[in-house]
Image 1 (cartoon, rainbow, N blue to C red):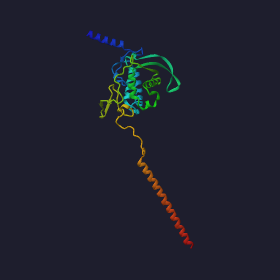
Image 2 (cartoon, rainbow, N blue to C red; image 1 turned 60 degrees about the vertical axis):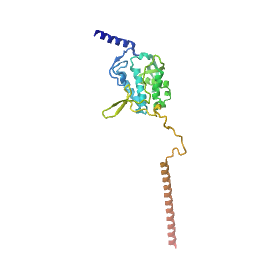
Image 3 (cartoon, rainbow, N blue to C red; image 1 turned 135 degrees about the vertical axis):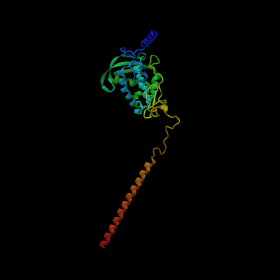
Amino acid sequence: MKFQIFLIISQQFLYFASSACVDETRTPITIGKIQPCPFYDNKPVCCRQDNVDQMISNYRSIDATFGQDGGGCDICGANLKRFWCIYTCDPDQTNFMKYTGRANVTDPANKNKLIEVQLVSLTTKPQVACEVYSSCSRTSFVNQVSAMQSPGGFFNFLGEQAITQGQQFITFEFSDYDSMIMDDTWMCNHKSNITTVDDKGVIHYWDQYGYEIKQQCGCNTCEESCDANQILYKPTGVLYGFETSYVLFTWLFVILFALGITIIRKYQQNKKAIENLDIGLITS
């Protein structure tokens, strides 16, 4: 029994010795269920309940901006959630991120306002950046923002948004060494086979990290989902845009209108001729 206790204590000591939070006032601890990061449930993490509450709020914005709820791709949203979970909660934060100081920067939401922020340097593998970006690159939000048209631009834009939300300015570096580990990133055309059925008999699809995939990403939001054998563009012809029913209805209306005018004018002419004839007879 004493030997077993010694092994457990030794293993915990070795774990914490090799793991460290970027915030030196914290050590990885178990905080139970972590709703926004279910793959960290009941595991030692660097995040605390206030971080969890903030992520729950922020992840609603991810769903509304990048997910199917906002006309995007749920796999993109799931990949982003997992990325920010690792950033916030991973027990080995010091392996891929560091605080580099503090500075006053312009608030992206208000150009006339300065915010004091914590400067953060985050290193991720180029492959991870490319995979996450690829799953999001065809969402409407990314297409509308010129600064997000490359993996580097995509992540640096997201890092700048942390100024307002978290009072942090995140600078991304890309390297295969001393970088964030994020394996098994799903491409946007991945077909989920992880399902649950709720009390109403509705089937729900999930990724392997516990995020719901409400709808598979289609061709509009995922290039890999486009069918190469399907004709997506058809050359225009002479009658391109010709709506037969509308045109026929319009011409029918014009013809009937012209016919009605002709009948009315003919009636008025006949009526006038009859009146003139009556006047002539009376005069005679």
